Structure formats: structure tokens, C-alpha cells
Length: 118
Length: 114
Image 1 (tube, rainbow over the protein chains, first blue to last red):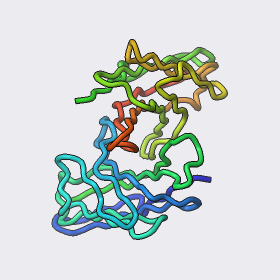
Image 2 (cartoon, one colour):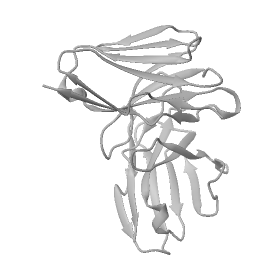
Image 3 (cartoon, rainbow over the protein chains, first blue to last red):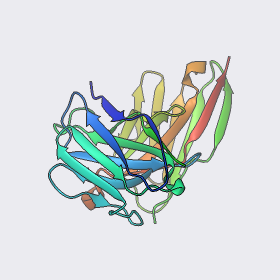
């Protein structure tokens, strides 16, 4: 149990285009999902916290108009990178917490999406 | 601001030995301190969580200690195996408004040689 999937697992796009990444909790409900970004040999950096049915909370320095987050249901959150540029190339990872609080308060992470902007 | 340091960027040990990884933090003690494993190109996988009022926690070959005086957590893997080779991440979680937000260290890359 407690599986989180991400789609796509990798994407290559041209500069200026938009890319949508999906994060799904497959066997549990998640009122809160988190989006992280990880550059090579760096730690995961929290970008935003996504709450079902309400606006996402963005971390300082993360442009909300560039990284659009939608959390329309208890099992799906999407991150759209708008007008992507090469500096947005990174590994994007989502995580989710079980709404019913099963487990040990941990977050369950997706497998990540590798974005490369040419 | 809160900082986390995982002292070793890389750790190489022989199979069968105990691997000990260190996580130090500054400022406030977190409500929870978590350890994750991350394989190349994959998302982190949860291993253990220890609360600020707990000194030690075990799970199979894994052991985590938490010393709020030293502001340090130690992560041990006993009887290490080549399959334990991965990057291990320490993460802090605080309560209150930032509950659920994890602050990650850069990780320690563990290599277990047969």
C-alpha cells in the first residue's frame, strides 16, 4: 500500500512550452501533497504544498505563476511548468500524506519526473 | 534559518560492517526527524521516523538515535549488504504552520563493497 505515481517519468520539451506533471496517490487519499525539486547532488527543495480544494502554498522564491498547481481531488495533484526554460530542467518529485494518518506520519514519494528543457 | 548537515557526502564500507551516518541540525529541534533512502533517478523511500521525545528507534537492521542536546541523529545499518548502497537522506519536520514540510539534508551516498 501507500503508492504514489507520477506521470510522465521523463519529458523533454522546447524552451517556451508548458509541461504538466501528474501526481497520484493510488491506494490512499491525500488531502495534502507536496512538490519538490532536486538538482544534481543537491537536497530536495520544497516548492509548494498542495491542499485539495484550495490554493497551493508556495515556498519563498518559487513563482506561483510559473509553477501552477492544481489539487482537484484527494488522489490527484498536477504541477504545470509554464513557459519552461533550460534553468527549469530538474528532477521534480511529489509526495503525499495519508489522509487517515495510517503509518508513522511519513510522506510517500513518487518516483519523480525528469524534466529537460532544450 | 534552519540548516541540516549530513557530514559525509560519501561513505564506503565493507559488507557485513555497520554503517553509521550522521545528521546534524541547527536552531530548533524538530518534532520529527525522518530518514529516507534514495536510489539514483528515483524518489525517496521512507525508512524510519523518530520523535523529539524518543531516544532510539529500531527496524530490522536499522537503528536511529536522536539527541536533542547535541542536535544530532545517527543512522545505523548493521550487517550491511551491497544492496544497501544508496543515498540516505535526513529530513526534519516541525509542527505548527509548517507541519508536513520536510527540510532535507543533501544526503550521504553509501557504498557497501562485497
